[in-house]
Figure (cartoon, rainbow, N blue to C red):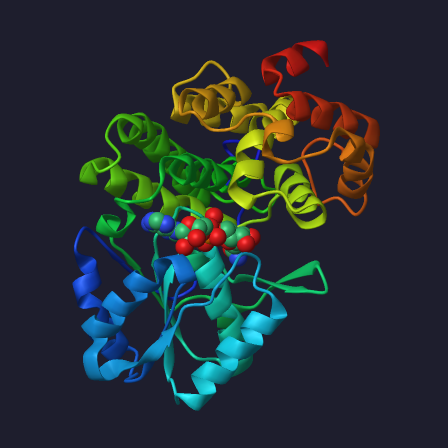
Length: 363
Ligand code: NAD
């Protein structure tokens, strides 16, 4: 939304329950019962199976077992196995503890069974507050939107994020900030979502430097998880643009790691859109406490020790032409027209990790 005095908008909101605060995992059983459920299948990745077992113990007789096989991008085979496990164990709800990959698996079950989901996020990806799902078949990821996959309850317990590794803390946070940044110039944005977006970016900008020094600081973990809720809600409510199209292309077609791609691309996508969305850029820069949106995001990644060049996260220079072609075909709506040659320049800068302010000045 470019005009601050425009007061014509739609604010779509879904009834859902957010339970937030250190130690709130202890309310899980109550939350299952509030859904009218009594047999919860617990999902996690193999790496977080100990968390899943802890949740199973907490649920006691309300647990219907653990399925700890979630992996990135929800392969259809894993989704089928998880659906079969839910059927066999007569589950009447799903509890997903983990990041976007685990929440994504819960969504794949809900899509076909309509079982309600309780999400317990342990990263900042934000999937727990969106009706967006993804499924990968034959190497192709298909995404869609369906209200049935939106978790009914989210338990945000920052204590569960104390051990989030440093790299994932930063990249997952910048992945979340990307949702808010693009939300601020979304053509279907609204004033309430703009407040969520600016506050979400501010919360991360405040929390990340503290977490770099002191990863187990519970107040900073709480602030970051609060930011994740706000930014995820933006993603779940309004449309995304160039940045997300680029990340889906690079992640989907070149198999680059999800949160790291977001971290590298975001400053460059902001530089590309800077002249077309000046109000959003001012809001982002202010929330970051930076001179400009693109520079603030680039510096955030660098000072936090995160990657800032595509070549450092597995991209091949020879693939940049095809990436530009793919990203410019069927583009999402974007405040600045998406031109293949300009996107190719953007990708070259991102590949080399060049400071994006230089791109803005050269443009
Ligand atoms: P992830 O869920 O893939 O997790 C990465 C790894 O970190 C996993 O091994 C996981 O077990 C581990 N992990 C998670 N939390 C941890 C913690 N607190 N401590 C230690 N280890 C932990 O990563 P992600 O970035 O959260 O999710 C990425 C996936 O989510 C992608 O497939 C992406 O497309 C999807 N996503 C979907 C949406 C949506 O709205 N549908 C939104 C954002 C991301």
